[in-house]
Image (tube, rainbow, N blue to C red; front, side, top):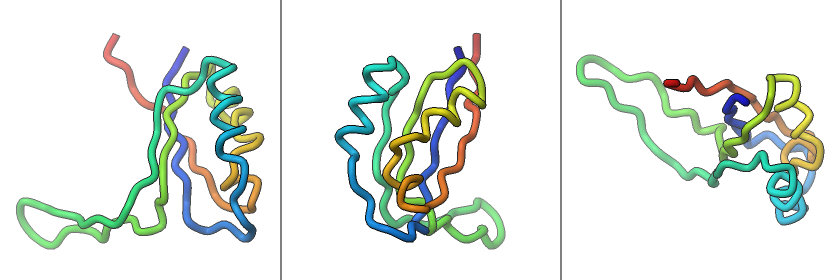
Length: 96
């Protein structure tokens, strides 16, 4: 199994509903590993001007899946995805 992070963008075209049902589904599948909404923030760099903070990110969910394709299948029922918004999937390296 591999770890993935689903990054929710704030670009939905509809109303987001069904979070409880979605989290129940992920838990029932044994895929849910955590997550949270994210608020405003700032970027920092030790030297020089930092890049801008990613204001379009509104939350994340960490899941476990066999592959990127299996993680993509977990988008069904995701309220951001179902409301026409963008959900970015990234693999998370493991130190095994």
